[in-house]
Length: 158
Image 1 (spheres, rainbow, N blue to C red):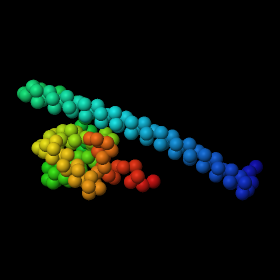
Image 2: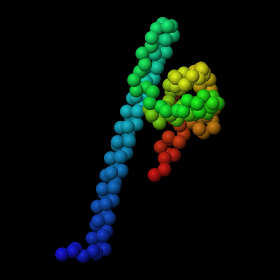
Image 3: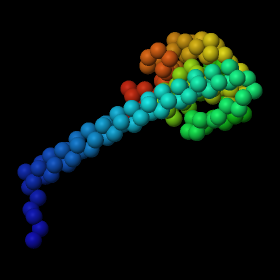
Image 4: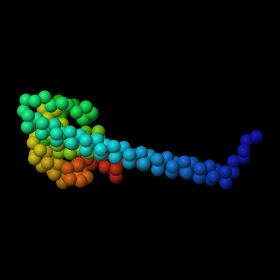
């Protein structure tokens, strides 16, 4: 026998669905927080590896510098990347790195530039980041930690 649909039964069903949805949203937010924490930890590890790699290359010229596995998870079309202005290339690097690792650092941007054959210095990257911040194209999370403006949580569409 089919249960008769009443206003009360439909309201109760909606309340149950809302509770399940609320629980799912809370669980998703918790998982996203964990993902953000892991990406930040990855960015820190990659930044530390970048500093050590740079120091090794500087102090021991000609020595073979081991490549860090997992540090190059960014995908930028090399021909397009090479043709971009310094500011646009910096924005593309911030977007790629913050998408992969949660944040971009000036050192990680310089490393990415080097992998793609660009020769910008740490100072020129810093100047480009400042210009991009003024233009509202990147956001500084904290000292030396940048994200693309579109990856900021308040910019996400829900």
